[in-house]
Figure 1 (cartoon, rainbow, N blue to C red):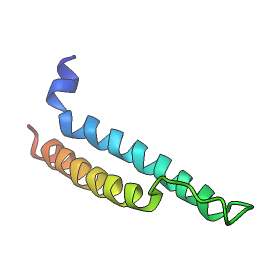
Figure 2: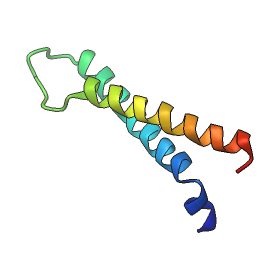
Figure 3: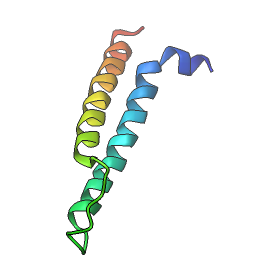
Amino acid sequence: MEYMSDHGAFIAGLAAAIVAAAAWYGDRRRVRRKHPDDVGFMPWTTLFFWSLLAAVLLLGAAAQEWFSGR
């Protein structure tokens, strides 16, 4: 458990990256659907954008900590 408490930005960044991948897959399925009139309610593009932004920032912060030797 010490690893998780020391690497919070890395764990959160990985979680955000997983959410971004799932949102990307959902958006891809929405774009390629057979019946264009079947509209969903989930904003996949917005979810993908914000989760990818969070993943990049958090993983960047984790990489900065790792390279600085903390």
